[in-house]
Image 1 (tube, rainbow, N blue to C red):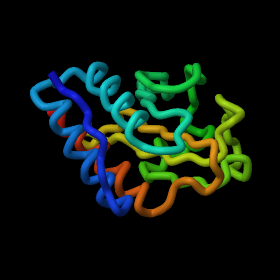
Image 2 (image 1 turned 180 degrees about the horizontal axis):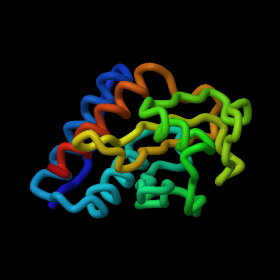
Image 3 (image 1 turned 120 degrees about the vertical axis):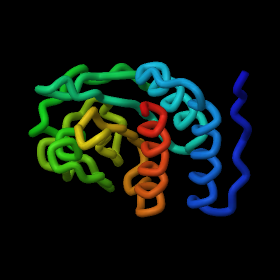
Length: 161
């Protein structure tokens, strides 16, 4: 049985390193995409401060479709040309948005969200979806968060091999 332990860290980099280690332990030996996405969403949502949503959208070949998440109910389908998730997916580049209301085409699934980070999930050269994390605080995410979220996504993608 896996039990997440509180992560004692003196920096964001150390917090994410501890979280990535817990994620590796949690996902070890399991290769099911949905199970691992559900567990990673729960782990990150519980471990990271000041979040109001954390989860996955999976690419079905035409658009992003809601996957496992933690937080309030969310938008079910997102076109690749809309919002922060669509931008991350179509550009294959992590998006760090300090003020979602200033982002052209932002999709407000939860009106409380003020900042967002979205990491594209590319596995074996193919887009499989995005990892989306929102906060009710403006400017909540920075470069350390981008790197940490990308490291968490690398753990998730490695679990699919």
